[in-house]
Image 1: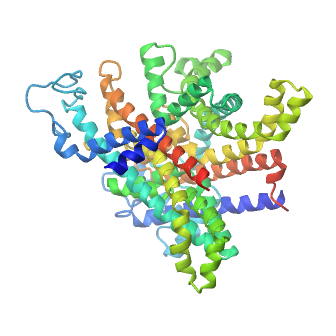
Image 2 (image 1 turned 135 degrees about the vertical axis):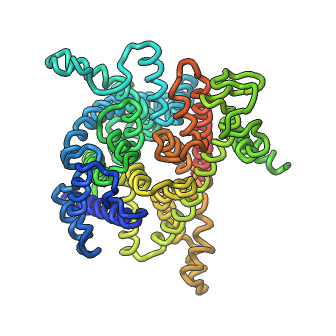
Image 3 (image 1 turned 180 degrees about the vertical axis):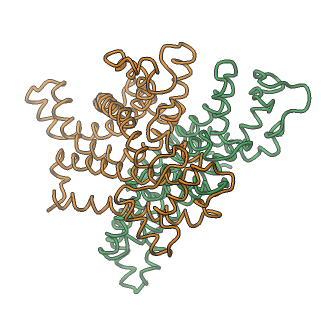
Amino acid sequence: MLRFALERAGQTVIVALVVVTLAFALIHAAPGDPFSPSPDDPPELAVARERVRQTYGLDRPVVAQYGLMLANFARGRFGESFSEARPVGEVIAAVLPRTALLMAPALIIGVTFGTLVGTWQGRRAGRRRERIVGVATLAVLSMPEFLVGLLASIVFATRLNWLPATGMQTADLANAGGLPAVADVLRHLLLPGGTLALAIAAMVARYQRTSAIEAYGEEFVRAARAKGVSEGRVAWVHVLRRTAGSLCALIGLLLPAMVGGAALVESVFGWPGAGSTLLRAVSSRDYPLVIGLVLVGSVAVCISSALADAAAQLANPRARVKA
Amino acid sequence: MAAVRQWFRALPFTSRVASAVLALLALSALAAPWWAPYDPNAAIPAGSTPLDAPSAAHWLGTDAAARDLLSRLMHGTRVSLATALLAGTIVLVVGAAWGGIAGMASDRVDRWMMRFVDAMLATPRLLIVLAVVAFTERLPVSGLALLLGLTAWPMTSRLVRARVRELRATDYVAAARALGTPEPQLLTKHILPGALPVALVGAVVAMASVIPLEAGLSFVGAGVAPPNASWGVLLHDGSVRPLDAWWLLLFPSVAIAATVMSVSVLADHLQRRIRTAA
């Protein structure tokens, strides 16, 4: 386990280094100097640019710049956001919890639901109803998440007016506090969270189906059945236990791939999290904020997928890295 | 032609539908400059109004700027499919090269090459693409395709490496080596052809993931730039007035979903073929 932890920590460092190097290359390859003041800047932006130039050490030799950038990034100093006129670290600290608030329930519900469906499919593989479910999951997977979100928002928010289309809370309710405020956030969470949960469930179901089919074909299932273990217990104890490892490994692989879709969903629903902030920063050329968010996001994803892989090893003794 | 027909008949039903859908889309994309009824980027000069519902004159209706949606969809399909194809080619070449070299290399080099691949797989692709988009003034479509391809190959290289390791241990490779075939030639002539099917599947799967990415980026204005059409651009145009101009959203959505679904079905089919052949 120690060796595994060290290996994954090393990997996270590699990822961070690759991202920083890329950022460094981009800053220098960009046409002109992206941080040089332009004559039509308002005074506070000029100040921000100057401060960023110092953080990145743009007035020093190139090698010193790279070192300074690394040192500053390691301490969480990313300079000042051009568009929000406050330190990038502060912006990130404000938006990351909101993304977590969206992702955590979506992941839990999506993985649970996907596992249930996939295991069910695994037992009935090839039958008619199972094939219909299979086509449905493939259809969900074929739609980009943001498109599912867009359609859901058109139907449930614009057309039926059941749920709010954008944002995280209603202004008057947020100030009221207490239970009404919580209920309000939940109502806002339902559409974007449901969209992500649906996409996650479809992906998980597709993989879980394959590993459940495999598990159902194994001897221990026959043995359990021969002992008179009920079908329900076979599915949710024996088969689920057998597939738990590859399920966790799948989540570890899915996380990095899912970030893109999640960012776009946030943007569709105006959810004020890291994803929509990043997209806004890209379109307003807020370079320090882009670099900060990309770096923090990559490292966060890297660590979470390492945790998922660790869970995979705990769940499946055969996959444990030999120490 | 007879060979194509025979190949087509041997496919299972779903794969047949999928390849027919893709062939239709590819044909309309290829023929767009000649067959598209109107100029995709200009308002129709006479006799049309903005936001016309589908009619005999405009099969798929017109958009808010009085442009013909069918023409825009055909040209958009061209852009989106070309992007996916270019990215898929990059995945195929880079993935096969990286995986092939890692598979043939010494254990130490192999471990480092694969460590890099793992790091790439753990990095969210969209973040990298967005960082590059933010710093480039105006990314051309080919640049976008290049970027999407260069962030998509690691999974394929992993598959190729595993296959190369398998093939390296076979008797015919041992025989070729005993005859004095140099290592590079061993890889290109004897091993990579055997790993090609795996690389192909990897590239097709990558294409199925590149199409939604391109659409998403263009949708939020970070990909293909309007007035040029791509599926993402069309979806963005369609999202503005979803209730009264439903056709603007419906047809591009169907195009994307049908394409991704067909590509996934074909990828599944290829994967099954490889597994039964192995």
